[in-house]
Image (cartoon, rainbow over all chains, first blue to last red; front, side, top):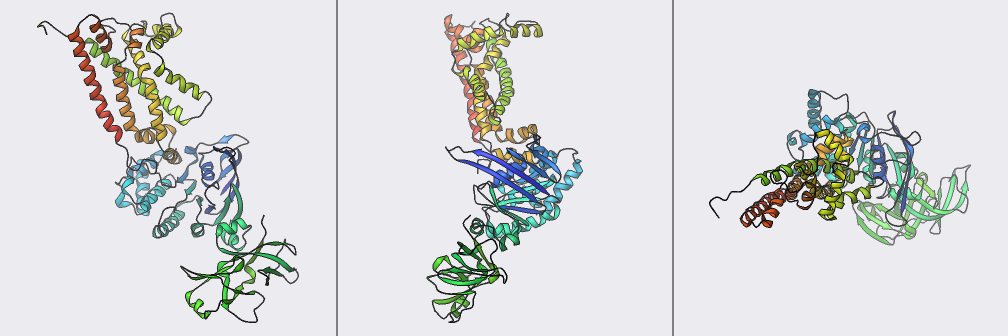
Length: 364
Length: 230
């Protein structure tokens, strides 16, 4: 359980540039992921949690332990907080072997210090768990990136941390190593009784691991919640853009009927039927966004259904998943090569939107 | 060279002893000062930094004069020393140690500070997040990462301590057999026209300096693989 309210101002080194982090993290989930572009304040958040940065205001409570409270001037130093912190480049001590790094961690544990035998047992157990047995005598520079990361995680777990923090753990890893890392995380979750906070700018990663998501940009939280909820109901256009999972198009609401749960929006001078949009008014202009996987391309027909648009595609490009067609108004759709052939080369197609998955968002 | 010519080796031994003691003191106090300057921000930090650098730019006579005033038999510090050790500080070989400290200390602090600042702060953060105290972090992580540089720096300080002239002359004087260090003995030999002695001592000092600096330069070039900013 983490309950952290962090307010921290940074006066920029460049004239006029200043940054304010204002965040409330509250999570019971085993893994909370903070997603945001670089410069959003992700690493600063971790540093505040670990105790390397001191918030100006707020309160940090982790597993019923008070780490920081601005009002009562409590600031527990990092060596007492016991937050396992996996830095971006793993920061294994370069002058110690793998074994040396793990021993350092075991011997650094605050009181009650485990006995030498217990330390040895913990080290060997973790060496086995993370498949590092044969590497114990290697120096960090003799390890691959993935091995270094496993050592760093094993080193952090030795002290039985109260909180595990990971800063962009898969940056610079290739696809295979990424898969391996997810496996490592699964193992880590099994043996760790403490919450994990992971920051990343990578949407893929955040879905692989997260239970709870926090979207942050420019020091503010745009949306927080369970990942399924966030994907199903993005709260703002920023979230939509950050997620990159949606097709968006400019639109205007032309009809609303709460009684029948029906709405209608005009996109590129055609109308489609959707659900009712609570909180919006007739005539509102904004953007519709639809999850990419909920947009389907069908062969042209003269009687389109209420949730279909008839459009001509402008450009066609090849993607990993098949073919991507782009239309007027910013709409696009992806489909497999086989589905594309079914269109018989016709530029005029029907775009079908699943009624439930059409969202309407206005700029702020 | 006449058959009866003999060299008085006292200045050499005295200089080595003075330099060794000064180096030990400079390394201990200098590391502490460098750590504070590199790891903390506080009011008056710039002033402290300037004060530490001051001996590098002041003429040795001026520095010596200050030390005489500060440590002389009538000054509080001088009296404290006399009460503690039973003899006055100025014009003893111990005063030569003080002179050597002021001669080499500033250089040590300046360079050690730069070395400590070069250590990626995240290694220290990693150590602390594992529960290591500040002491443990410094002695097991920070210092070993710059160990080569600090060792080379200590050697440099030793060599520099061997060679102080001006401040030593002011506070320890030139008492043969008691406070006459190597560089003062050379001055003395030249003054009294003893060219042979001067030549021998000059060669000794030069060789000693080279013998210290050459290996020091070599160890400073070695660093931990992967320890540089990645």
